[in-house]
Image (cartoon, rainbow, N blue to C red; front, side, top):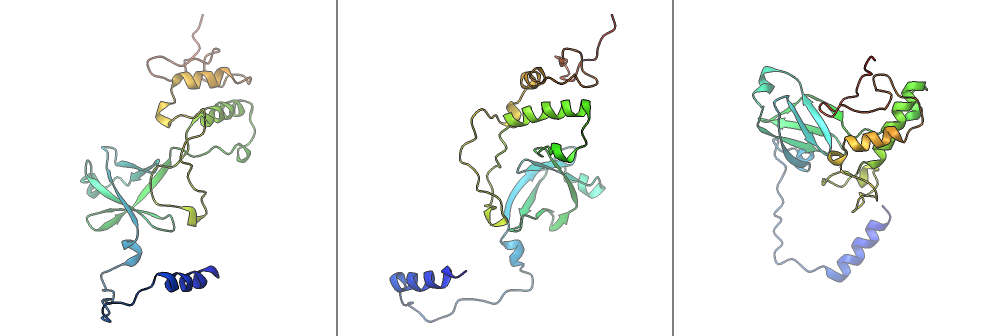
Amino acid sequence: MPFAPAFITDFNARFAKPPRSDFDAHRPLRTDEDLTRIFTWREWRKVSQSLTLQYDKVMYLLEDRPEHRRLIHRYIEVAEYPDGRIELWADGAALPYTTYDRLAEIDQGAIVEHKRLGHVLAIAAKVQALRDSRQTAGPSRTLSGEPPRPHQPALNTKRQRLINRLDLERAIAGSTAPPCAGLSPSGQLDRVTGKPQKARPH
């Protein structure tokens, strides 16, 4: 960038000091060293019984293979590259996986309008508005085009785990559309299973 040369010149003029020795301590890069991988953000996550792990509010699903089942209850390495790419490493090798984004945003404009579907989306949007969608601690992604994370959550938001059945019932009650299929006329959930109650015959 145009600012960098001027900044370096000014900084060196004010703070630079002559070295005590002219010896160059730099060494050449070895063939087994990968700078791209060295400069990744790394964290460790435990593999569940169902071959899943979570990082940055995203669930990662390992392929069901015999060699992967040996990783159950082990901690493996999650490496995030500066370009946002994610790799899962165990025993010196990258593992194939798929992802399930638990906090994916609903794009109503990308879904065909439907009388019952519109009601479901309205409820989902109300619950989504209650959710704290901030990312967890991790590397800065502002260079990748993402806005900086807010230090505090917005007002009237909750952590995803704190959203409960009462929040869902309030969202259903606040919608004016007809109830969706599978729900009782009152839109209540079963107190034991948490699933929509089916209409009982009279």
